[in-house]
Length: 168
Image 1 (cartoon, rainbow, N blue to C red):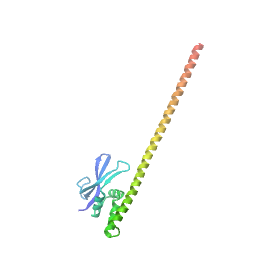
Image 2: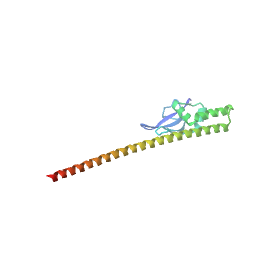
Image 3: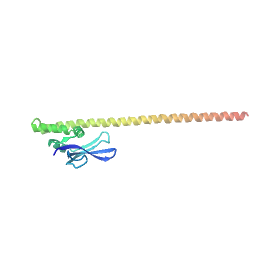
């Protein structure tokens, strides 16, 4: 039975939410699956991915083939790296301690990169909000200045009318 690691769509129209599953390749896209490995929510920035790393590595070692999108997600979360490192242990090139050390270093580096992107997005959002506030402030000041000028002109016209009526 050929097994695929693929995405199973859930969620509303226009708001996709995916389960990452190991399923028989002959089953329907949203049909029966063998094991749920995690979830993927592309609606937030950065995308939210929850994944059972050990389960995914086990399925890959047993011959499951990920689809292109699933492979990208697994690679992003480090499953493909962990599979590669575990293969090194099986062949005798690495020890379990070395695998854990390398994988934890990679995870820490990846988390730092994601945190950096999150901070960058938050700064961009705050900057855009500050620029919008400054633009709104400028428009309000221009509006107040125009109102003050109109009132000054109206007052000057009233004074001129009173002077004209007193002359008559």
